[in-house]
Amino acid sequence: MKWYLPLYCLALNACSNLPPAIQDAPLYDISYSQAVQNIANYRESPVRWGGMIVDVENEQDYTLVQVLYYPLNSYGRPLTDQANEGRFVIKSPEFLDPAVYAKNTAITVAGTLKGDIERTVGKKIMRLPLISTTVIYQWPKYDPNGAYGYGGYGGFGFGPYNSFYGNYPYYWGGFYRPYPYYRFR
Image 1: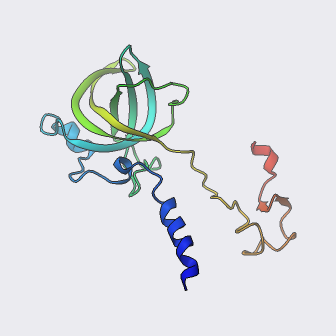
Image 2: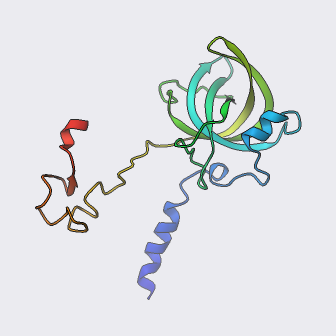
Image 3: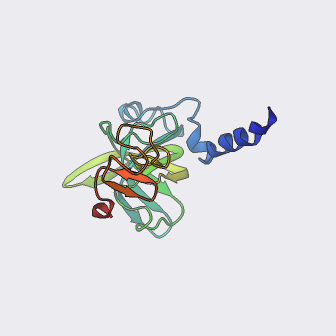
């Protein structure tokens, strides 16, 4: 009965790899639309927002990152398959390398709403919410096929196309694929 306890502990530990500020939403979670409507009411409030990086500007003492806002799921990951609601800017006191924080990278930010800042988007001047960051979490690229690819667990017989080496024309490294794997590398 006790043999499963170490496995259970490992499973719980795997869920806690996110920083606590990203994993747990603030007590009074302010949505993007609330903040944009009345930014003065929510000044100095804690927020946890996320989205896709649009632009990174490094100044002498800080970095400004413009982010396209997407709502977050329960883990704090941006739901990029939903409609975006606008843009916001994060201000970090440290240098953020534009090669690491590249355009179209999914991030989640925890910090304090400081007000708004004027930014030029195309030829239009806009007032965007400004967040002073405490934590920035960069999400790894999402693999829609999961860890096991198309072949189930190791590619061994869990579906109509997955019998042990047959029925499907492409088999590489324990996975069956509906297409030649080398085409997409």
